[in-house]
Length: 299
Image (tube, rainbow, N blue to C red):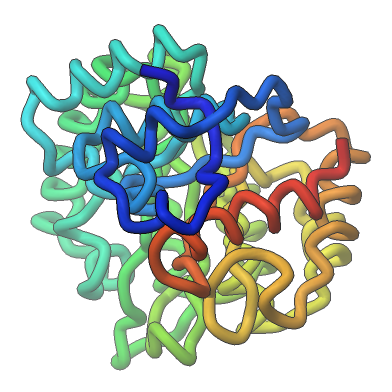
């Protein structure tokens, strides 16, 4: 069975995933940057099996993958995914490290129980990262505490992150802090790149960097290239999504070709996660995603 082609005929649009896989032709061109799709993005082509989705993505040129929900998968599924990615020569991107502490005031109120819960998440995340050959893990710093100044809350978060960094550093692992936009996620402690930069500088560890989600930052403050330039030394990972709509590049207002050209010009060789939806459904939508990344790939 040859998984490597796009559907060429209208009749194939109604075919089963197995029949569709047999009708595709090989693509020998890998993307020049490590764009990372996620599970579900190519389900219409590849079906529900996660390994088949990985194979399809590799066949059409993608060299990386990310999975926010990796911590919630069984050990068997984690190992199966990791084995497939190694065979396909794909790099593993982020998964969410702290699903329990991400949405309360758990970094802002200097609470010992919050710190203990987070440290336990970090320990569990290290095991998952080693199992799936991951390096980067997303950390969301939760909500602001309404009862005292943001400066204190920032310092409390720094203390908590320093404790985590001491566990990650010997393993060569990196937590990447994700600022979230206040329109979709009101009252979060971390929204702006400048604040993330301040926190990472204070933690002062190679195991604590910024996840620059370009969708969130376009909504929050724009000026994507300049903000990335100013915080470059602390950025460890990027995620992508156009605005409005949070779909693939070319569907909104962001000039992603220029943004990717800048990122490449800085010597970035890491992963850019495709944390967005498809602007159209089905086969057509998946092919539109692939075409959009071809159009914006600075290679």
